Amino acid sequence: MSKKTVVIGASTKPDRYAYKATVALLERHHDTVPVGIREGEINGTKILTGKPEVKEVDTVTLYVGPQNQPEWYNYIIELKPKRVIFNPGTENPEFVSLLQKNNIEALEACTLVLLSIGNY
Image 1: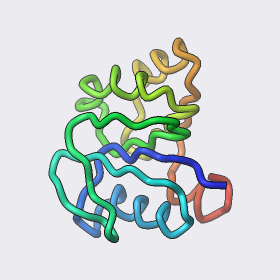
Image 2: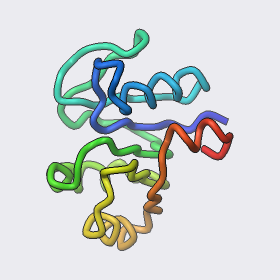
Image 3: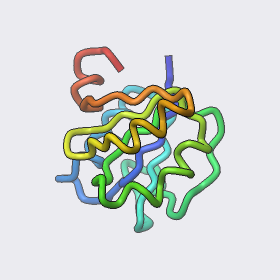
Image 4: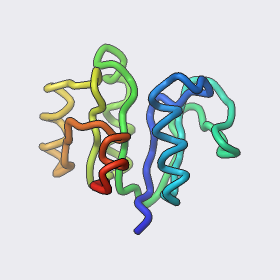
């Protein structure tokens, strides 16, 4: 089953985990919306900039460090995802608390690992 996923912190650099996760999500046929600070493409999928409107979001996967997350709080909450995945290095207790208050699951995990073990 496809889970619409917004990748926050998407990059065109193949060595970045956000890039690798986007590729892995696309390969597994998840509806993937990469959002980054610079335009570009990942495997033919356009990286959107700003805070684009996205409907029916299942998952937001974060690749933005905690120091840069506050500007994303309202946007992510307004997307109304079922869950937000905090990838290694993005852990943020303040944001986790905000998400929980909005009935959004906060998961500290690695998107790539979840995909590789079939647990996404």
